[in-house]
Image (cartoon, rainbow, N blue to C red; front, side, top):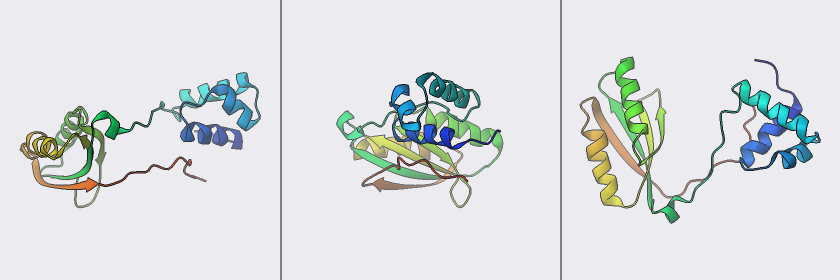
Length: 154
């Protein structure tokens, strides 16, 4: 991978802070012509550095009144079991993110549901009901904030 210059980093920082920002606004912030800025953005996409964009949603206003982190430990750690578990869980409508981890637990699921009964049913049906699962621990999330600053990797 090529070394990114300060302009590339500034473009990434702008996009990381606001994925909906216009190319014209980014170009103004990084002191480039809009055409040059767009060319750099496309290159960053083609190089796989920019993987896409996302929107932040207010889940509470959409009916997702409870968020939780669900730690899961599997009995078997072969590639097929891990991959199948990950793919099947990430496709569930309640699941926002699936983290495959090292350490005591194998997975951490970030879930969002309308109420406690839905959370209980999701855990029983989609998690503890699976033969490969040997341990589950659910922790409620009271608040969640995400940084808008680009991490430094220098």
